[in-house]
Image 1 (cartoon, protein in one colour):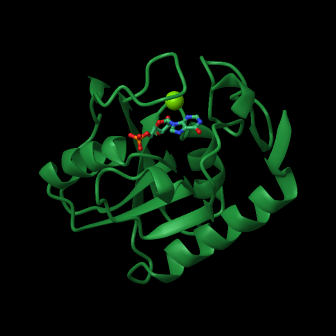
Image 2 (spheres, helix red, strand yellow):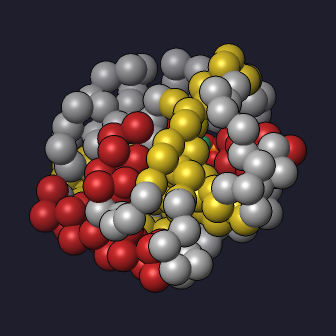
Image 3 (spheres, protein in one colour):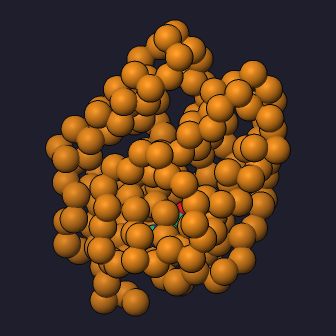
Length: 172
Ligand code: IMP
Ligand code: MG
């Protein structure tokens, strides 16, 4: 396992993202963060604590990956949002944008809910593998085409608990 982004770099960048998201929001506005389970839950947990003022969260269960390291091309919705988006400033929180299909689907679900505004933040961006032309407003780190794990990201459900982002290309 090679370390791509260590704990200190993650902490610094997540703090910056939280400050930027707050600064770009209407003064004092409640921010509603929505993430797709499971990969983004660690990032969301840190990001919401790095964002001052009122912040709430909700989750959908969605995925385009099976047990392997390449996208199946299908997006599955297993569980939807618990609360209404009417009148909310939504920030869609993604762990990693690869083909972009998962994010495209998640953004569509959010827009259907009729929120006041929608922005998207992704911890990691792999632009070389993009298929869908989704908009990502804030990116933590742009990375090469490595299969990465840790900080919520898994390989076959393993490694989500690593405090850093590492890569295991030999698994491809
Ligand atoms: P997309 O729909 O192809 O953009 O895939 C995005 C989803 O696939 C992410 O939310 C991750 O759950 C998963 N994924 C994509 N790349 C990686 C990776 O390098 N490691 C772990 N999971 C990944
Ligand atoms: Mg995954």
